[in-house]
Length: 76
Figure 1 (cartoon, rainbow, N blue to C red):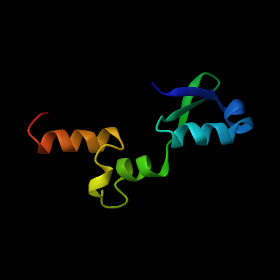
Figure 2 (cartoon, rainbow, N blue to C red):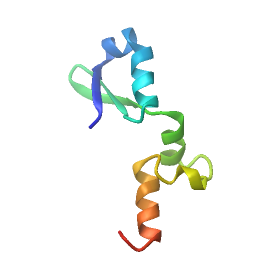
Figure 3 (spheres, rainbow, N blue to C red):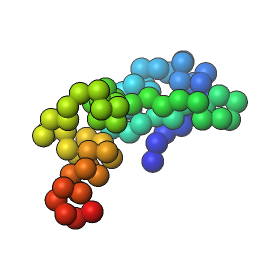
Figure 4 (spheres, rainbow, N blue to C red):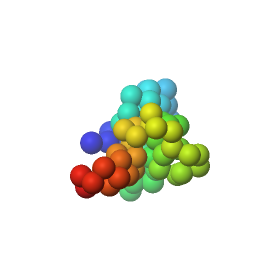
């Protein structure tokens, strides 16, 4: 479950938002009650955005890599 921050709180506590993202949990940001953004770790962003080849050690870093691993092993 992602943590949720108002935009003002995320701005005021940006270090905490980044630390939580680095711990492996994406952080949702809202403005006026609407979800407007998300903060991810660089590793998870790289997996999701496919901006780089996914190294073997990355297979469990994010939902996309886990899904790919499950498909290739025949268990999903």
